[in-house]
Length: 95
Length: 486
Image 1 (cartoon, rainbow over the protein chains, first blue to last red):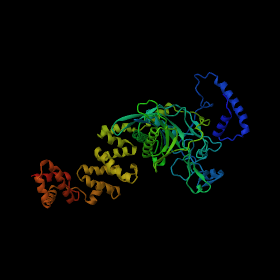
Image 2 (cartoon, chains in turn purple, green):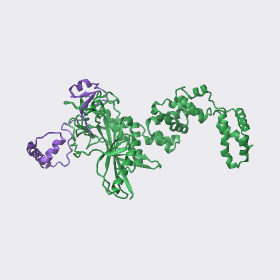
Image 3 (tube, chains in turn green, blue):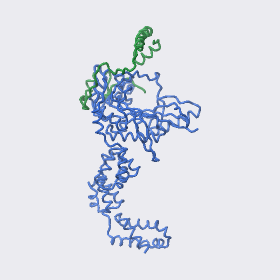
Image 4 (tube, chains in turn green, orange):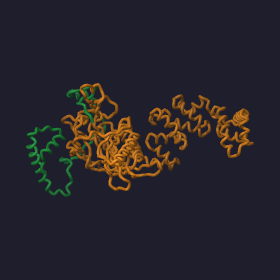
């Protein structure tokens, strides 16, 4: 399996990555070589093998339902570029 | 042409946990913006989510409540998309292995028939924050405000099979689901605060056709009324469109409940491509036998079982039992009233009549009613033992509602409302009424037997008026009849 220039642009857009036009071709080639590796792995017979959800052979520890995080708005908004009335401000979003 | 509507629902239910699904920040409603959003909810670098045990328990209880299989191995996945109220750039949710498998919810329709709606699955996920577009910041700079208090609130998303055929069934299903989650205590059920939100998938097809038509999805309906109206509108739009030679396109639509208008959401340039993958920050959550057994033992009586018991034990009609078992608050109030009054039918009538009218008018939940079940039970006792008539009882109820006294007996005593059951006094009063209405008495006596029943109502009315409603209506009727006929 290979990816072409339009595929690279689409994936870049979904991931909000900016790729210069003259880098698109070489990126397509690089990603395609990774996909080739995936192709050769696809050839392995995995019949009867449970899909692996996590590489660690451990299970999730659960947390009791108790409030441990009190209001930290002042510290957390210290690094926000724009704040008003306690809200984070972002360029206007229209759905 | 005859058309058939096909509806499937997706319902987001906010779980009533104290804290977020992956962080220890509070989920209490109404806090100042961003005061309940911690580093995990903000998606800051270096954070690590830890699953809230109670969210897992509540989702399992939902599964047990709809006879569903519980998946023992749970994997959380990342659903990737960019939006300012989703600071991590992905929503942590479940895809391949949802916690709740296939189940069913049975509904009762207006004509008394029942129908089973299949649940495809229900999965756990986190809610996003809120974007606000109205405010001083939205001036010349054109900014939106982001409040992340809701980000990370645990949700279960319940997905039905396309088994629903019209708006009535959709509403009956939604109400039943509301009843199930509030009975389980896993959701506060407060629709006005967005605790339950409905996405409605609607398509139409010629009656008899097997294949489904193209469907549209109307998102985020937060009341039963809006959902019903949105379905009517969308079904009509699709049929009109097809009959005019057009075709329905698959799209997401918005319905504005306040204006009753629906419109297409600006179609996205990129088709949804969420690039799901298992969340590397979370290990699989394993549900073992001991947890399952413990939760099974904690299960409350579900609405269907409660309804059956109300019919069997209290002799209620199917309709009454349905209403009184629908939510835990009403059911508890009803049972407490029956205990206090020892009369199920009168308790049912008063709760569904006078009480619910007063509660609705004042937008008060039954659990916060100023007239408690004990007070109402005491009132009903006095109707039963003929201390007061049904009419006077309404006056007593009003006084209790206004907080004038704490018991019906105190109101009756204070206002002197005790019913007159002294036959002599009633006879004297009736004699007065008959003497003052000689012409009507003549007419009555001249009338045919079958007309008299109706005519006697006039005299009863006059007598009740004369006694200011305090005369026992049964006695008045009986004595009047003797005097008029005799």
